[in-house]
Image 1 (cartoon, rainbow, N blue to C red):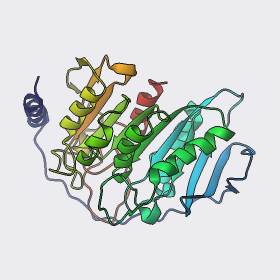
Image 2: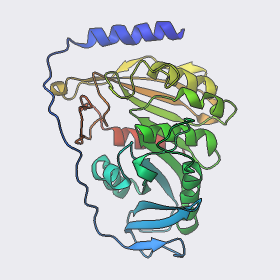
Image 3: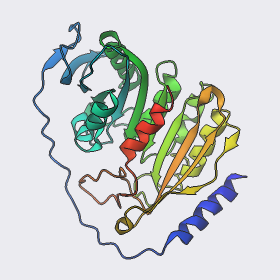
Image 4: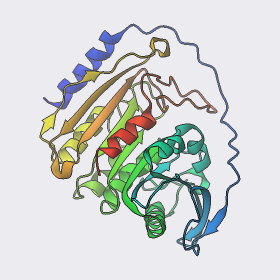
Length: 321
């Protein structure tokens, strides 16, 4: 099935789901996040003394960097996965930690979470000429985080997820650190067109995309020269990973009819290195994180309550060990 037919199918399903009512939006402000006071450590620390939250201060490329780490309580010395959660532009590690719910899930599923801070609250996601990021080496920073944590904890798999600009960096890391990363997930960002060359000859890696059709920041239909459409992002990674089997488009249960959204799922399997690809299309969803509302300084659109993106991300990660 060609991409135009797939786009038509997604569009027809969108129309068939329901008629859109008038939705009143309320302007909100970005939350003030006051992180819990936690122990501070440095690169010289040999081991984390116990489970809990820590603030890591380090330098990379001569630039001072900071990230937070959450370590769940475990009863034995079994290896644990590592999840690195990347905030969007204007956010921080503490910000995404505050609403994503990864710490609670880490306690249940026994994985470590790291929340890095971008320089000036942005990431170097690979777009040449972006004056906000300059020459900041965020790829090297992530590699150093992985090495630092893995040297002190028994880490078996490394997963990267990100929101908005953090999702863009997740795609870049999938292509530039394939030997260190097991799988990635992007929320509110389709695949950047400017990374196509970077990713051309890289190893297959499992990819999950969660994207709203009414996203006012990263459009579902993409931006010429900027981002592929959500459907073309799925197709790109399916081709990149050598996938041979595509699934039907499935409509998830409308568990909260009052949220004015619906979610459709499509994916590809039978891929090289078990690197399957999945897309959750959040119809009428905005530049948001499904299941986890947060406040923002401008209107971002609807947040779906029909799925929990954090749990969906972990389920996808856990299937790729």
